[in-house]
Image (cartoon, rainbow, N blue to C red):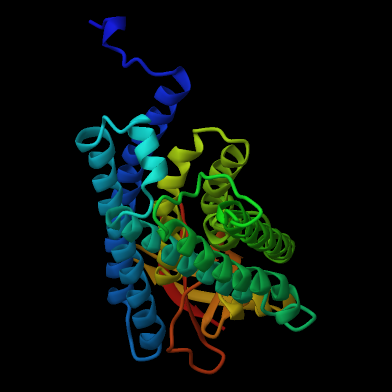
Length: 372
């Protein structure tokens, strides 16, 4: 049972602002749980299939995801501490808990979270630019031409991020303050360039994958290569969830709507979730590679006969496949009954001359074999 007299004697907009800060802290906790789950899955996947050929890259990814997880943990701890300080310890702050959250960005607890947030942003965007370079390998021009704008935007983001950290580290300074002729508020410039970079890279990757999807389906037919160019793959590879949350913050912030408080806090974990999803796909062998790009865009297909045995019976297949990596292929084939069967890409270093190890999948199971 509630009573109107229990409501604090504060304006409705102040109460709403307090709600957004508290809801943002809760949403951040949910995001951190997802980060923890993805971190453990990525760590396991990277370790399981590590060998001499891929050790350097996988060790790099292990270091990367560990750093991101540590930064996410630091922000989560800082967020929890600030929520406790504003809503419990200093709830009688002159402008209330939301005022404390807005004004006290320079105290040690919040400063640790701010540094972790910016570092996470830099690491996440660096991975996005790298993935963009991978997916754009094989373009008619040098890969650096389409990447020139994202790289310049990333360098600008680094500078803006430093200026923003200096600003909010100053006592009595806040990202929510109004700029003046003598003092610039770097919040909007920094987050605008960060969001713009994310949107540009997301659109570039999504457009390129749509082009690949068209190329694959025109060569191999509908439904093939979906693990590379399906809708889910495009969302993950382009980090669309990251760009979406960034927009959900910057647009309300630009119009001075308190709902920005919620998405600002949650963005700290979303910008970790997006790279972890990409790395998990790479670790599982489903991520796009530069060799995949070159092979698919070249359009070279090969006819094949495919003899194999699964758990129950022998299979003699015939069809075509396209090279998707140094030792990986994907394609389609038909069996003696005319059933269409997908040959799934497999990364195997035991390729011998023209004999290609492959695996196939169908409704009643699958198996391995050799395609010639």
